[in-house]
Image (cartoon, rainbow, N blue to C red; front, side, top):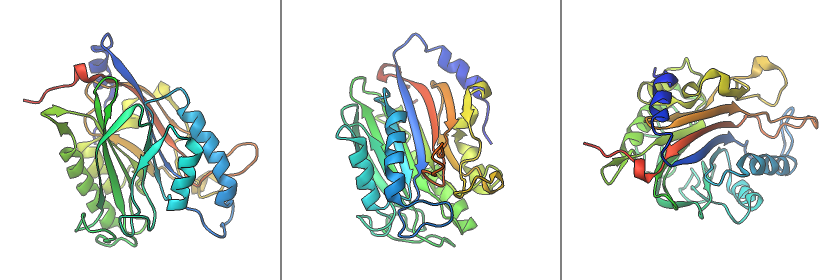
Length: 302
């Protein structure tokens, strides 16, 4: 498992005088819209305005923010798109058919700030290019959305991967982790320059799970890159729509493949229940802030 924020924090300080980009990444399982909610669960029509307010607050004043979501069926994707406003757009497809069917794992971004250079959707299966394919012992089709962005004003590049691992199949989770490690490597270079590749998602695994450990053997959990005194909020990310902390688990994560040169600012697991006692989702959003070098500081390979 790769830890050790101190080394990379030192590396980032060396570039503090150079131009940097203030980044915020979020991953958030928004809970799919259902016709009848379970215990503690309000309908999407009730949760939607609360979520829109939360997202707008968290992205305000952060033009470079990138947000990825899980369990969003197409009408919810449209709702998020409308609620965030015209300055935002998204990339992603439905997992059932590669179009509009089933849950999306979309990535939202501001096209005035980021230019989408390349994107792809892979199925977490033995046939990752086959829409709707179900892998190993998974109960459902699972996908990862990958997008490479170029910062419009500086030319800096970043790749973001958004995924949702299966909730049943342990082999599927482990094999999915291996698949994503390989994909992160494939997306980590452009024109002989390295770029940071981030992975955000509901992985349905805690840090002691072999699937998490596979990811952590080649990538770095962003939580551990941030000094403990700059981590905020909760530890556990799944609440099951209850106030009983015994039901909570830490299964939503953000990883980075190559953190060299990044200056880590803060990490947070945010609340989703306030004085109105309505759960916005059964998951809490995970947020990491960092500074990224401009294109002028990008590292050449070789």
